[in-house]
Image (cartoon, rainbow, N blue to C red):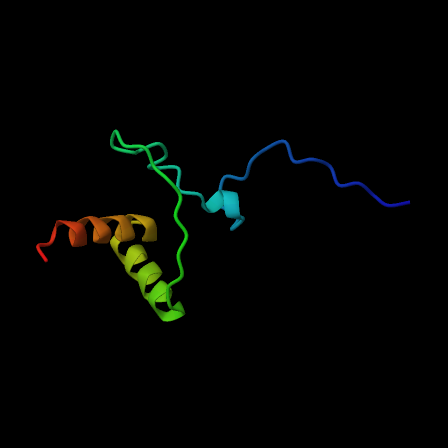
Length: 78
């Protein structure tokens, strides 16, 4: 007979490294009055690494840097 693990009733005080524990809830719902949509695209592996490192140094998310970069590019005169 196989033993069944008990369900943990209490959440850990410290992050465990699981996906949902790493979720950014600080800016949850912060859409600045605009609706959001999901986009997927491919980027080179080295660029993704650099993006994640820069975001961590700046204390922001990679998504925020991408959105800010797109906004800046769209405002530039061609």
